Image (cartoon, rainbow, N blue to C red; front, side, top):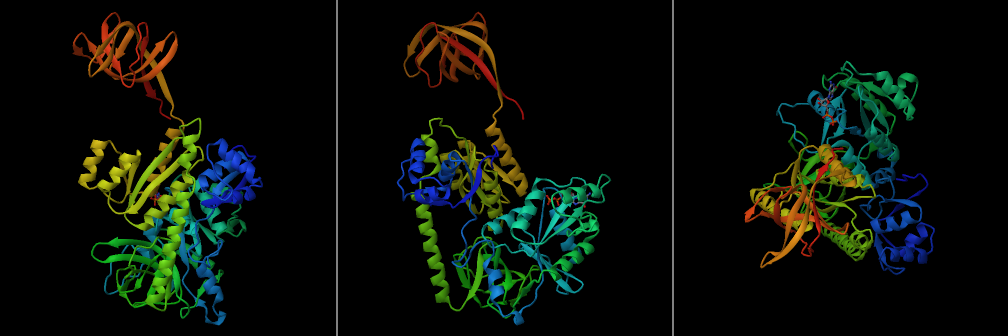
Length: 596
Ligand code: GDP
């Protein structure tokens, strides 16, 4: 964003007509068309161009474009206020009752989000006589002072971002974990920005206070500097010192959550219209589609017919976070449900509808909409086309194929990767779906020079073998931030491929031999240093570079050799170069990467 500080910011949709783009950047359509033409794209005034292309045009006109928040779920969905909140707002106020707050835990990597979620779960999930074992369904509920609190258990930050992007944020309260020994970090700020934008109250959990180098005062200071004045300093931000590791301060934190909940009017009508958010979904071999739903208004019952994104079905069974079968679920309760005909996307809204017929109508309409969206994307001018035409050519792009265990992981990975896009360089997700890495994924990667990323999945042996023969790189992760970190590093590497060239020798071409099947072989005399078989070569003629490439073969007399030293003769070929002339100088050099 605005590295130079002068650009104006603008939000653009995934696809836009030339005319609309011109309007949004206060340029004439002719100017836009000219700019597109200068970049080799022929487009008329009514043609759709994709976001990336539009962003480039916008940049040339002094705008930093960001992708507009993604498509709303239903037709009534607008802006930042999710539909479920408006459903509740439409209820008769007399019918509204208290519902448990839904809490999401955000914070910088390694500040202790996972540890905190585990600590709360283990200390506070109520065990019943049936002795259920907690199931990972993407959310859980705990009891404190006889009141329930729902925690979203999906990979914090990222999941929340994905939900926000879909205009369906589920949380009522954000707990921001800040490590007392590390203080406010980039993702801390990001989390604050998200909470602010979504108008969700925030509590700070000042974690790791057990550490000898914990410095709570410093963190308070940092928080105050970015507008979160701690309550201790008479501000509005509750800061609760905790140690997630030693399970200290957890009660205080739960207390604070309930306090904020009491001040936030968190209500719903258990008898009202049933609506909520899909937390995660996957296809289970034995049970079919399993989806975790968070009820936000109304009461969901087994037997209800629901629509979730483009999926629908009659609920055959529901389970709570302890794996117990339940027949109904009230507002703020997370339940895993069986009975959908397809896998919805995390962040989709779900609603109960009156009949199967209505469910089919809604989903088929949504599917058509999706199809036509996809087609309009297809006919839009793609980034590749644009870059192909750039005279500068090579815009580096990292192509990825992503496989993950559940939709709930896929969404945050995709959105975090989208966040990495720097404008100079792009991440291109060619394909993303749930399931193990198979042969097809590797084939796609090989064909498109992509790498395959697996999250909580494995590559089957056929895929692994193919990857080896095709030199496709498969990277497996179990922690999202490590994945993101790696990609980020890869991107940085691509941005600044810091390399150092060292010339190791020169040879002069003294004769050219034509050898059938091999082509032209240059008979050389090594003038200085040495020529190495696996080093790079530069062919020079009259002081001008003719070609840079790899050596195809290097022979001394009849033998293949790995190097030839000063004063010896050799015969060599260079891959992709066949135009040797007598007197050419062959320079042998090595390229080393300078670690960042
Ligand atoms: P996340 O990336 O925010 O989910 O962080 P994790 O929960 O994975 O924690 C990162 C590291 O910090 C782990 O090694 C934890 O054991 C450690 N950690 C988390 N909470 C505490 C704490 O309260 N005290 C100390 N000393 N270490 C903690």
